[in-house]
Length: 156
Image (cartoon, rainbow, N blue to C red; front, side, top):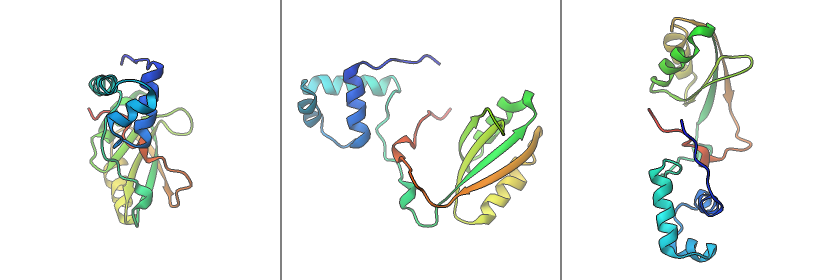
């Protein structure tokens, strides 16, 4: 994946939009000391380059009965990528990453009832060939949750 470098103006636009995506191009232009057309063009390019996506993101810290489940998965080393892709294909899983440390893979999901997690771990994850061990942790109270990072990757 080719990475792109943001110049100072792009970075400032992204910073303002991350705080208030509903800000008008005119107001943003005034605040940045550039024309509205410049802001509009920059935002369009940032969207086309998949650097930003202006979307509604749920602030899960505000939802009653929301529990984040962190699922650490120890796998056969040769199957990390394959198992990661299988996990990513599960509708219940919202985040998957290969890791350095205690687990090969970290997955995350949101649950409302403990039975959901038991079913997911026992019937969907632990049964994947190459999975050696699964350990779960629950995030019960959010000390910091920056919902602006809710969408960090494109779905493949």
